[in-house]
Image (cartoon, rainbow, N blue to C red; front, side, top):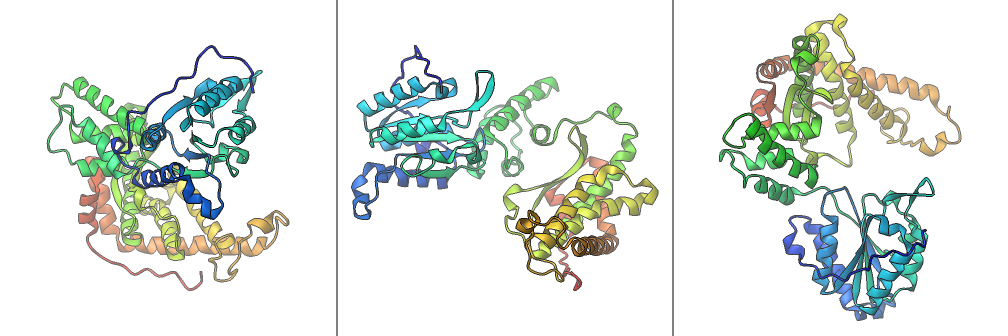
Length: 448
């Protein structure tokens, strides 16, 4: 780490924002309040013979408010803070100076912002010197608490998260619903159509960062002026969301035989949507569209908050059927000779899921409860022929099942496809009307 002496003098600051000034992140704020209680009342730990914690690491995606939470933490704790960020994280002398000042003004908080930053030292890309910072934490006054932030825990050397350094590891996730609503309401302080469905927009922006939401507001305003409109409409907002999430619209002259592409895409996405509603009703669909974009030709947009982290065998099998249904619908409508490469990603995901079910999730009837991850490092050919046989069987059975479902529910698929061709986008409420409230029972075939 560089020993260069900086001319900048570290400054002690007082935070002006508290947890009540930050929208959302309810769970994280509760955890931080609990940590503040501990560091303000260290005697609570005496009967457990546990030393006072020296720091925490708050990690998560960019633009979710980690820096604001750090400053709010200082205010809620009732202490001043110093912060180190950017190139200063590579200057050992500056870091030592900051901790010296913090010790003299203890109790105090030191904020290390984005410690997974990369720098160039002697022509090579390098990390912050975690070992040097760890040594400083070991020797600093116990009343100095370190609040570090990072995007990824994987980029942090474990030496910095060992005991009596950054003791607490807290993950802050994407903006929750309250935070997203706050950003949309800020956008709607601009001239807008009062008929805009705020809750609908809040659903659409799941998973987006604060920077992306701020960009939506700016670009929506510019779009209003560009189109000579009076105010921001729901259509303009959704278009800006789609641009950020999925890419810009592709103009007709940019794609040869666009009408044919749109028609094929309509049946492809309609099959995905209809079978998804029938087989995976717990995964809500926000919209289905065939509006071509720079990143994809049409898509089904799911509500990310409904995604499952632990998937059952029947859901996995149903998901494979949904993935295969897009190509099957196009082949049914256009014929085998019109098969194209549009299903490449679907086939990739379906193949990976079937292979995982057999080799690592222990879901196959014949091979049983196995996970070959460790075994494959010793023998790459273990059960090779049996796996190949069962993999092909899973894919064949899923294809047969998806074909049957596409045939059975073809009227719904065609109705949705024609609606997509007519208006390019179908919202969740209209999709529900097309599919209806039919409930189907689709069990896993005995051979799987």
